[in-house]
Amino acid sequence: MAERTTEQPLAGGQKKPELDLSHAQWQSSTQGIGDVQIAFVEGYIAMRDGRNPEGPALIFTPAEWRAFVLGARDGEFDLT
Figure 1: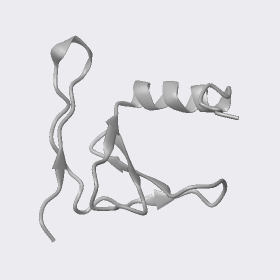
Figure 2 (figure 1 turned 90 degrees about the horizontal axis):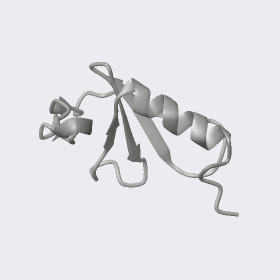
Figure 3 (figure 1 turned 120 degrees about the vertical axis):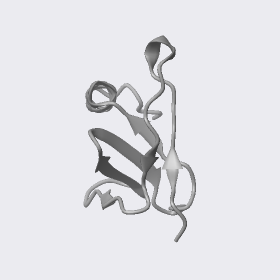
């Protein structure tokens, strides 16, 4: 398997480091609908579509992940 890395910008123009996701231990939820998977890699949280594991992954800092989770809990992303 080829090495899979990702790089994304941080606030203030800084860049997140390239992460090697080829050996990430992806986790899926046992509840809910969808195929979202997450992995904890080098102090960051990676999220991908489990139906397309070779596709891109979003990378979150711990603060970004916390804001995302809290927003989801508050229904911020509820489209119904």
